[in-house]
Length: 86
Image (cartoon, rainbow, N blue to C red; front, side, top):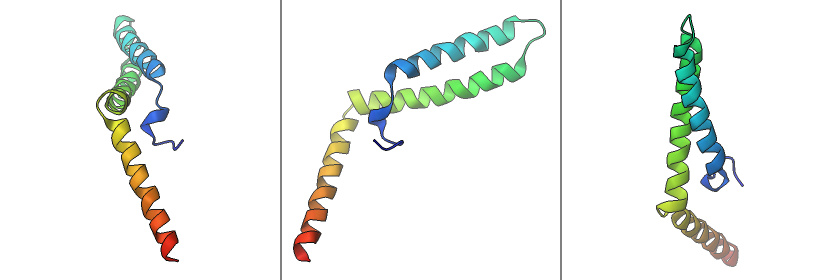
C-alpha cells in the first residue's frame, strides 16, 4: 500500500495516540513548573491525529473506500485501452 493510502491507517493506533496526547497535554499543565514545550508538542500531535482520524473515518464509514476503488478501476481500464491501441 502507498504511504498516503487511507486504507493503511490503523484506527486503534490513531485512537491510542489521541488519548495519549490528550493525557500528556493535561499532565504538562499539572506539573510545577508548567511545561509549555511538552504541551505544544502534544497539541501538534493531537491535531495530526485528529486529521488522521478524519481520513480513517471518511475512508471506512463515509464512502471513501468505494470512491477510491472506483477511481483505481477507471485508471486500470484506461491503461488497458491504451495498451489495446498499441
